[in-house]
Image (cartoon, rainbow, N blue to C red; front, side):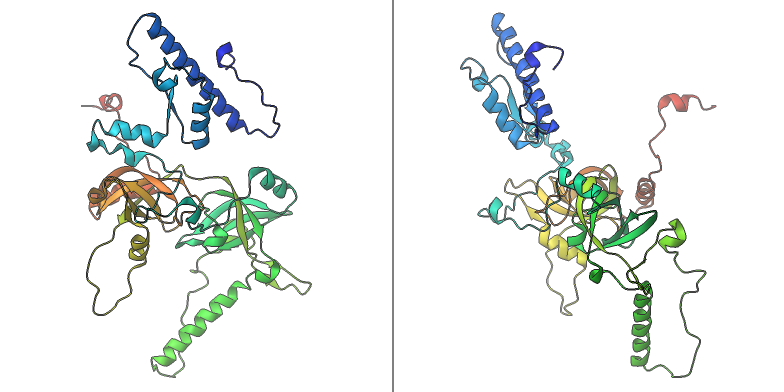
Length: 407
């Protein structure tokens, strides 16, 4: 806005004004300048007003301000010099030109989709699954006062519902256990988070306790099976072949002393806020859909994926778009909810999906379709999956590189 006087905005008198709000105001001012200039140019030359300036924003409040701030002019199109649309609204207009492109599938989601099965459900009655994240100003103060601790959240390799955050306490690095959806509070593997420690009475006992309990359970099963009471060498994992701990790998303490007697406990905590998201990676996997089948006579327990799909899959009011559940191959990543217009085409395929957001009223993160890798289970497709998961460059060489090869 420093290059033209007509695109400058007045300095805000509010010291608490967010820089993003000021940037939005600059964008709206530039859109008005272009719309006004285009209108005057076509009017002065007696040309038809067949061109329009569109302000694209996913910020609802910014779009409302765009209409309120424009001076009304009956000669301008619809009384305004530029129009406002969300990205989804704009892409929906483009898709009408060629529905086979499925452009809407590639639009990012920042809000949970409305439940079309119950039109009476309003925003007030939406279920809130998670507590709100602490805002940035309180988070910054809490980090300085040591109420919160900063670290990178890492999920356990076999489950997205349990993980740890490595924090610094003095000169030592300590792994804080974060367990359960409420404590993880929408963090995804790789996110930089601020955590709040639980009280000491909620910390976990020695890691050896869990191993002892497992051995006891194993002993009970052996007795129930009626195995021989003859003494045999105890089975287990040898120390040299056991999975290394965090202390073995990165010299990170998993337990800290909580009293003068040196009793060791594993600290636990909850995610208070997200400092930086790790949504830049595309994830490989497949969608799970509801199959209308008769209930089996043996009343077998349904697969967890089927339970999640039955709860969250739905068709929207437009009759074209559906919300489906995507399950990543990486168990550290939670299921992702997608809005798609090509549900039937994606069934049985390996696809790439990107996470966009995770609002508090959505049980799982929201994402969008990126591309299809191929049919699930085929050699070429699964090879592509491995290359994508381990971030191995697999794009074809350009023609200039291939031209350098000997004949």
